[in-house]
Image (cartoon, rainbow, N blue to C red):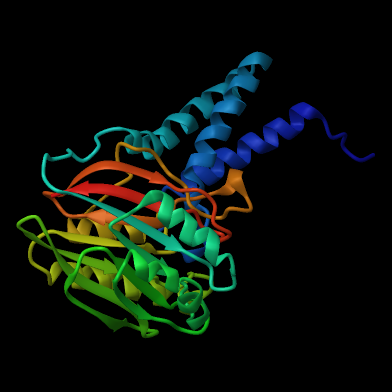
Length: 310
């Protein structure tokens, strides 16, 4: 006789999986496949709360105890992002927008309209192809200072600015030679360095190590600059990924999300599974006045927008 599936049994199975994934992914360095599940910390937190309520109603002390511990463990990863925002100075404001446009997306007008509505000072676009440069040429009316390195596939990049660059170039980041833009511009009395990059998606051993190597090279670029610096892009690594945490630790940068929440950006087509893999990181001395996601533009990513102060 086959065992009968019950509602309580399904809740128990969900609880076991939530507990297991929550704790195992808290230590994601041992294997790349574990890292893939570390990005869903917010989901584990929410589900552990819902299951805790369910088992409290069912008066099951074992599962209540397990889920309290799981909720608290997940809260340690999630709640700090809603606290301790970087202090906003009274200096000059600069509004930044980062957007992975999705190379196969052809909604050029929606992207242009989103930029027009937000009016950022500097815009970085990723997954830029020749078609995207042609489709967004209207931006040059408001953003006359631009630099681009379009590529076939998903790793072209471009920057549009209302402010003249002091310098702008791209470097081919190891190991796959994907372009990284390095630009400097004057904001008030400061020379600000802006670095934008798009490491590969870490699916499979080769691409996992390739993404890690590119992130390490970005840390080297940051540490090789003087003065205030901003690092931004789709890193294909969430704020809970060990490699991302290493990037913050090695550079001393902090994410503009801190104090403003998780701000998940991808994937658009799965709202409950959305994770924060697009980032804007700033060095000490740069304040953060605001950080948020923008509206949908036809891409599988949401724009990430931040107003910083120097």
